[in-house]
Length: 416
RNA sequence: CGGGGCGUGGCUCAGUUUGGCUAGAGCGCUUGAAUGGGGUUCAAGAGGUCGACAGUUCAAGUCUGUCCGCCCCGACCA
Image (cartoon, rainbow, N blue to C red; front, side, top):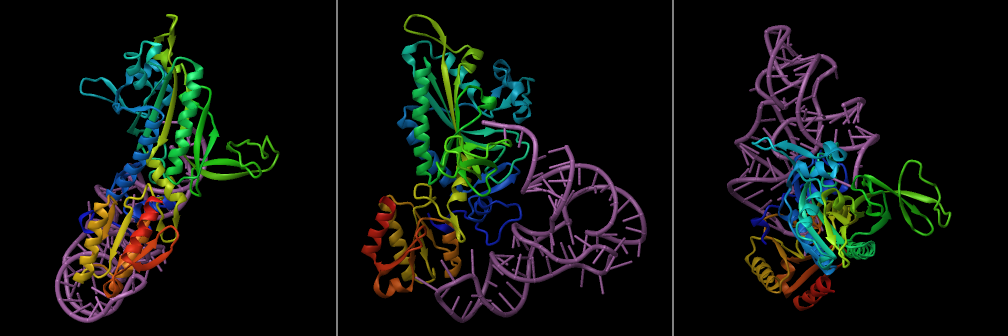
């Protein structure tokens, strides 16, 4: 992609509306823009990052035999009345009437919808176990949306649901998804803590939340200074670790995932049953597994930035390489830059070519701000001896070498 | 919802205390020139319902009232 053909509105100064680091960089690097509190437009760069996260999630969910679906965001309120959650969820759910006066809502989550679907299609133990998941926009009328994408009223979530005939099956799926989550977050470049948690409105007994430590996080976590075990924070929390008696340290964190062993709450309420091998009618045992996909963008920025801007983990970067063409009025520099662009593009490497007529300093600052892992710089030096310059955004290492060697260094950074 | 802060061109802000001529600066944008490796320099331009409405006044960005929006803290939260 050519910079001049896309929309990357970088900002030199910190917008008034942003206080947290991830919110500031989200806006400054031109990833997203606010429409109103809690609702954001994703610009080309932000969408590419979002798609990269989704790709990782899809790969890992498929690897534990999840099958992707897409359920409606538009839902009949009646289903929520049947599960009893209509009241529990209360004003967090957006509600309205259609033209016929039918009561509708926008889905804040999808347990009811998936259970209703499954009820009509699963009738035998032979069809179990099953995991279905989707990546979809959720709507929650938050009391206080804040920190950019971290708490939004419209956001993108991956929600998965497991269906089993017994508790053993649920335990197995729960563990499989738990492990898949750890792989997902690692690939996203996140240092994540898995914590036993309250299941709250979701119901069920066991739940784990996945927390990312971040200075501007809105949740708090306690970590044992000795065994590093993390526990969720509440006001009357112990000051010492129950296991090793060492002191606990409070850190701020962002919750990016939450998984629950639901049991039969929804299958009983909505009548999702199956016949076991002996012909007994039993409720399906369920689990549900959520990831805040759009929230990951903010969490990743919180954990991967420096004074110059974002430092994207390899797999999330909106482009793998940015070619910084210094002096676009110089036809030789542009010829070399375009050639390089074509060459990398043919190799399947995603490249952004900065073809703007801007000063070198502006381009360097913007390249650092965007956080694309590898910068290739084409300037006067390249004309003299055919050399290229590579800047590694992560290590800040700079190499000026013949093209062949630079391409090797590039390959090592992309594939290695 | 309670407390606090803010709202002036695309962005950052000054001006509001103490009302006074045609509303300013920097960045960005357009045009021209010089420059060309870490947010250049000079010149000439374009761009504004001063968040909205109502009121006070000879006169309102500035004072009063109501409302709207954004941010932060709290409560809440899957």
